[in-house]
Image (tube, rainbow, N blue to C red):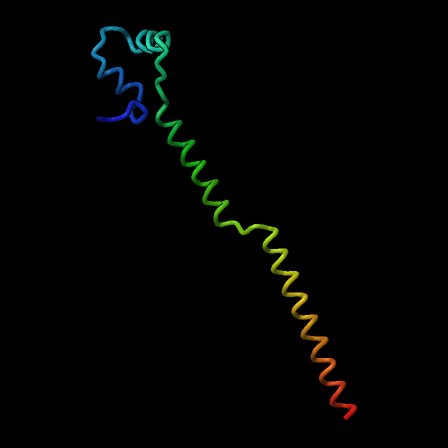
Length: 93
């Protein structure tokens, strides 16, 4: 059984078998409290939301990048200090 969300208003209208015009049928359904979704708009919205989620997943966190860069910089400084001490100690021997 197809879900009402998957069907367009036009499909639901045709399946209802009513003799009302489309406009009158829509108004009647609205007064009954039936929500008839706009399938094209829903599909577009879902695709946009999906793109936003994909961007968030593929986009690295700025904090992680900063931490990685600071750690890399500190590693370079520590290695530099270590190398300096080793070379200056060998010169004095």
